[in-house]
Length: 213
Image (cartoon, rainbow, N blue to C red; front, side):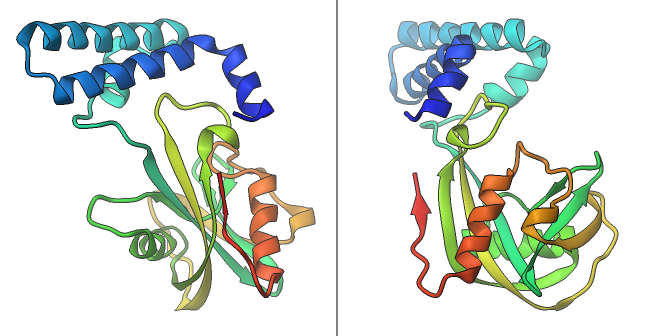
């Protein structure tokens, strides 16, 4: 655990406790057979939801929806982000709230990392893209804020444009290419300046080696 992660959890110890309780409860509900143990693990999961609701300000129903709706052994969610360059500038898409991000999103159940990256680029920017290089695989909790109540594995993929143009959609309102020194207001919960700088380094490198946590 690095210093940034230590600081985040020391400021919000309840979040770490709630996440751990949820993990224990979900594993217990997955593998236990005894009815009394299942009742106990269900109560542990309920306690974790109550902690999250009390400290986050979300209703208990909202917390149950986003925090306690999975079955099976708990694993991190996958998020892919595409790094696309034109004239030494990187492609960003503007979201409905006015912040900008690399095109990307959650990996759908029927998609691979590669196909999901292609799909998200098309949906959010209108461009047709080909993934060519894996830039980084990061544990979101070590790089982005705010902390989430579940694990996220962020995958940054260097891509090339083969065609297309921006098309209005329900997720983004605009797209543009930016220099590292002139970035717009970023959606830092999805990508921060350090992560975009990492994409620039991979773009300029002839022998890039994938960075991973």
